[in-house]
Length: 302
Length: 315
Image 1 (cartoon, rainbow over the protein chains, first blue to last red):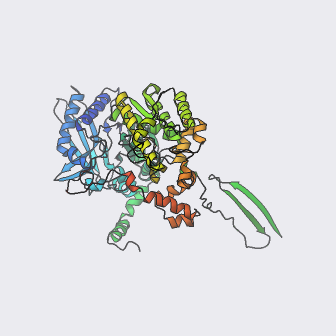
Image 2: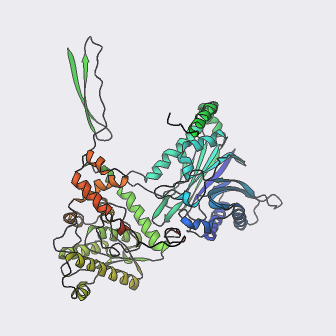
Image 3: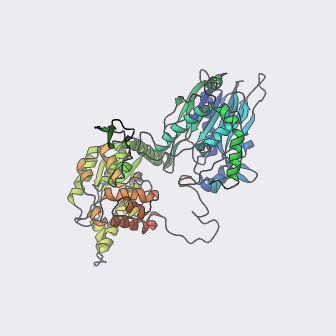
């Protein structure tokens, strides 16, 4: 199955949900006018508000239903009269049951042949690993997610993870073991360390993302925020990586852009046939689970 | 009988590695080549090396974003002292905003060195930015005449604060944002007048050590005569930063690099750094935390600003 993915690397306006919603509409509108429009659009982490909000999280957080309704409206405004479909993933600060989360929503948008509404929320992932060190302070302002789920979409079984989630290789392993063929990664990664050829965190992602794709033979789609927030600049570099670990399209570090690639999900099976590492991992999950259980019980220094 | 061959080669890290291979005939004993990591060199500058081109692009993008997009200004005003920090800041502002949008202001006191003035003019001429000279002598002495016993430290503080009065007033007059010039080394040493040099709302160099300011300046073509001269606050005749500190910038920066990463002074001394220099640097940082903060406010409520009520500067 071949389809087209677009990752939209944009600069949100800090704390301005309405403005950022409009920017999402602009991207949908530009995408719809493309000669062959994308099937999936991926926006970065916290794109509806900006990332570093501190206590401002409570002022911009939305429930998943509110966000879904707003994006659906923006989608309908941006694609008048069309009957196509669009899957969309976006980061946002979520309010649910009296708690705030750093979340990513996968939603499916579209109208049937007679114009009937076929839109809905497919999945919401809540950031599992909340960075709270150095420049980061997430645990102070949001609660953490408790699950790493995969889910069916029009384009295969997928997982959505957020930023530090994938700095721990185990999350991508869990997603792959649960059947993900595409891992969508949303990020807001502030640039730091300027001694090497690339900005330090870009170099880190450039090692990390192809390694995930290659280890599990999955597609990796990475959407990175750009722009400065109070002197801290996000490093974009949104990319799409095939299951061989090859980066097939990548955006620049600083500028807004739309990164587009066609991917063929059949590649996953082709790569796995030649390099069945995931099958090997699956076979050993029982023993690994016992090791994890042992570690979780405490005496992990043994 | 043994045959000895000598090899020399250079690894990708430029570490020269020498070893011998000894082949002893009719014997199973052999000596294997030993490949060691290069020893630590306290003089090594590698940790402070910048990718200057990358940093320049980043800081230009930062200035455009902070000045134009976020604060809605088109123009910047920079106090040109003739030193490397303000020169580099003017270069970066010119790249970010265009030469017609950068105003250099020279603010000499009667004892300021003429070289400072010439170098400030050289920067303005090199960049093609406007440069105005506003003497602070009358303003400073208008106050100091009531304080004839003021020592050089107090006099220096009055000059620095007077310069900020002018810079902010010119900012208002020109609708141009004042851009700060303080570097990381002087910020860490507290080598500035509080709420004077550090008061402009935007600072592109604040996370660059002085030796990194030099690297970036050379990359962007700040005149060599400015980059190579001894840094000086020029508040007292003949003053130099390094004379005031008691340590050179390269030595201080190498120690600061490790101290800020969390290395203990003991470890730095074991690594080969000079003990008294490590202690001097550590003391300067430890006694000046207050200068890098806003005033201390007595907390009384659970909505105390910046303690409980937390909003980022750009929110």
